[in-house]
Length: 231
Ligand SMILES: Nc1ncnc2c1ncn2[C@@H]1O[C@H](COP(=O)(O)OP(=O)(O)OP(=O)(O)O)[C@@H](O)[C@H]1O
Image (cartoon, rainbow, N blue to C red; front, side, top):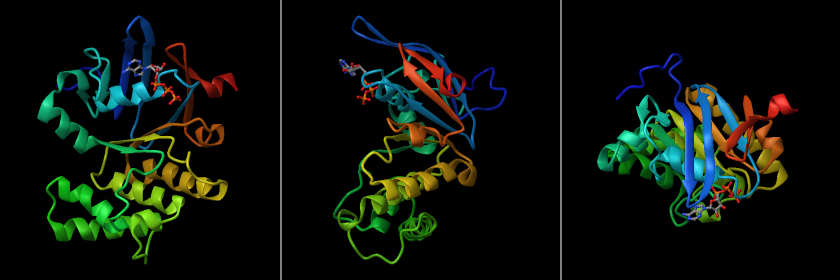
């Protein structure tokens, strides 16, 4: 089903998204359109619902009808294999610690994303090697567990690009890095939307990372508050 009112074809549309856990109203009508090529950052106090927001966008929690649209599809209308396929085609997730398989090499980790999607081995390995060159992880025969934190996050970004996503979700992507690595991984991360024509939604506690996004919101009391307006 295609959203009837997609003017700018956002890769993500949050359309009055509300969500409660028990008696607690965690999200209370969150509205956001995120276009391809755009980076949006969400900060907010611990427990304000940032991870829950990501889970709703991923379809790990089922949102209400017409409240979460990813690449033109209502996530509430997708179930089972169709949901898994839509997620695999359009979404990528980057985590704080990379969440890569430590015993595999970087190229194996990145290629795996293609292999699991049914891509032939040779093509997956060639594309993985190309993406690793692009993110600056080359010439290493080390396993991913032996890489530096920055190299690991670069590898995670290469893996996130394997499915040519419409939208990359990143949860504290630089949270485990020292200052120098944080800055260079952030440079790479925020270059992705323009270079790859995808959207980027970053959840972070780090204001200096959030400030790099085109738009920065704070999630408080169930709503996204525009931090640039507040500044
Ligand atoms: N399955 C669940 N059952 C009960 N409470 C939950 C569940 N999932 C989340 N919560 C509660 O909902 C609130 C929001 O959690 P969430 O993880 O989304 O916050 P967050 O903003 O990501 O926090 P942090 O910045 O600390 O990671 C928290 O109070 C959490 O304890």
